[in-house]
Length: 174
Image (tube, rainbow, N blue to C red; front, side, top):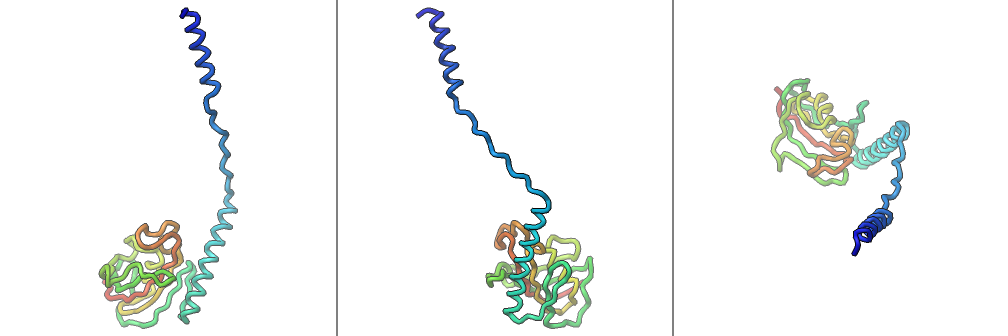
């Protein structure tokens, strides 16, 4: 074979491979989402969650009140101890469940929960709620997902966007 033929064949083969190569398909650009759409979607999700909570509370006949943040609470037995304040250590006997009744966490399984108000990683709704309590109080809180574990859950027992119910008693405050 002549070198001219080898050179021509190599060029022709290279051209053929390049021209027949798979071309990357044109990708569809993601649609831009404007802030108003996100705000509207979020409001709809919050409204649906609020409706579920109202229905849940109503079916149980609980005399709950709602805070401005969306926390539902009821103190069903008053204690006689010191009121909870920011920076205090609080020890609670508790049970955390989902609206379908599934118990996720409890003192019986996990031991009492102790935390420092304003300086811990507890749910925002629990922290808000305990500030309304005193030692010896028994209460229940219904936390919308945005005051509980949010969009991702706790990645253990509480699923994404879950409303949770706390039944608790304040055992000690110091």
